[in-house]
Length: 121
Length: 162
Image (cartoon, rainbow over all chains, first blue to last red; front, top):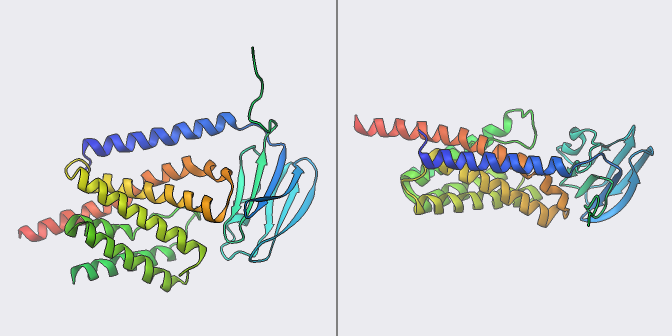
């Protein structure tokens, strides 16, 4: 069924996927800040350690985001499929919850904002 | 006439797949692509385009997503998938089997959907964190639909010989 090119193709894609998993894992530290974006604009920045509830207005209505116990989750959303609610709580840097219909992104950011931990000379 | 038959097969598979509950809501096998693959291998790129176009248009009307944000993603993904599959099939007609072509198509579909989601819906670079998952699922779903199309093509070949 599979030709040689098929097998090479599968191998290359699996390798690419594995490498990008690794790259993401390396750049991912413990989460520090919860960033909420609506339509690409940053609407709120909160420490993940402080309990808070945010209400973000989107084209469909209000998305409610809860920060509690060092984790962030979408508590309630006006979208039909509720994928953002079902995603559950996130806590790692780089993790995110996306609500496409209401154009809301909840991201967790790590310690260093510029992506550099240290510079050696 | 046969293209219309394939288009309706694709449409039925597409709607039927929507009825199956999915454990991971963002992961879809893309069974409708089986019909596109058959059209591509039996009738060429033009036939595959017709089968895909009819499925995307009528499918979105049937499940009620026509012209919604999701429709942009699904039609963009389907168009990219068709384009890549037709190009690869033309450039290396003997190189890739229908399974390989299917994986090309599924991967193109996923990458273009992610790009469209970034450009149009969620203007955040963070969305690219999903790329590894999408690449992996493209290989898996492409393999499943490609294997289904391979099996169908074998059956059709046997039917012609008898």
